[in-house]
Length: 499
Image (cartoon, rainbow, N blue to C red; front, side, top):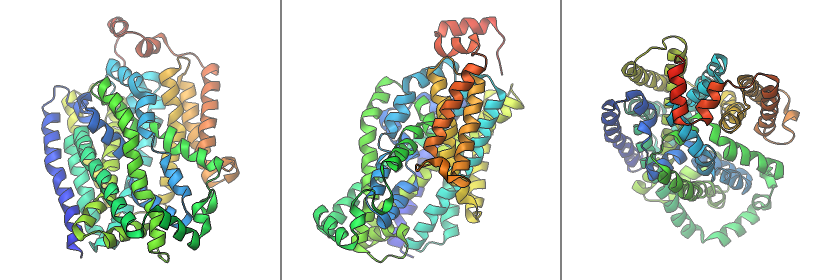
């Protein structure tokens, strides 16, 4: 075992414990324990907000998968990955103030709370919550499996030990510390990703002799590596697809969009909108472009996904290499902790409280959230120890399917008064269904693009058509989402509260 490489990773895991304890003391002592657990009391400042949004959006694929694809197929994958650079602007700007204002007025705490209040449909709430639980749990398992296998190959630590230790750590700090623990650890992990990317560029560029030398050597190895579309297939339709899937539509993913409810004030939001894209660019270029450098240094590598970790270990001193390798681990942890809370909220508030026990008091919801989050973490841990063979199919559907089904009812529900429950249900089921069919049954329905693009367009068409075919939203919905706080309070005094 490479203890010099493993030591910084172990220290990273250990550092999460005091952060989680601090978050736990703040959440458990809050007046609104449930609100603090799921949204951190809407208290995030600009820098924590920036890193928790970016760390949640950037998974292990940003740090390992993109480099592997770039190694195999060229610069096209760097361009594709760069489509996620504006993710902070889109997640916070597209939803931004409108989403946060509505969330504060109506005391929305979870992603599905928005759908429940906006569409007043138990069916919309139920299908949204179930879809989130199924597909996000599958995605979490894949994150741990991919990250653990790569680290095992480099450090020599047994796979099962890696899964148990860092999956167990994520489950513990997320379940007890809640949203604040996830946000604070995201910030710490985001700094590791940022510094790791910068350090890697400095060392590798000095080793290979700069960009000019890399380009010349790459052209001599395979000229298709440095042209578009080249071997990557990144023609204009594919580029537009990636811009949608990892740019615009990313804002609809539950674990990302819920961050738009959590910031403290407008100043924090504006700072995150300005600084966020620059940091995400460093994340993406710092690791994704290393695949091309790896092609120069290791032209005959057997497994592309191991090129970046191998490059890090070979080019950096052991301790520094371990610190930089902590970046993909941090990406796994920061993505999964966000998803655990979203799934926990869906189970506790949207399914149990919404359908079984609507009068459940605040302190019981807080305790239930803690237990359910811990349970989700354990389920993911067990599944990661023995991942099912069909897992990748669920993963492919998870991100694109959720985007295709959720983006339209989320954004149009926020900005278009005519949107109704029939439109939301048609868009939700139609978008996800189209994506599934185009991905696995009838590839021609993708029209040469990633299936999420035509699926989202189909979902939009269904939403608009059903909005005019079905009844308009009730006055109650219009007042809640477009009225003043005073009008909302007066309406609540006149009408019995809805569960």
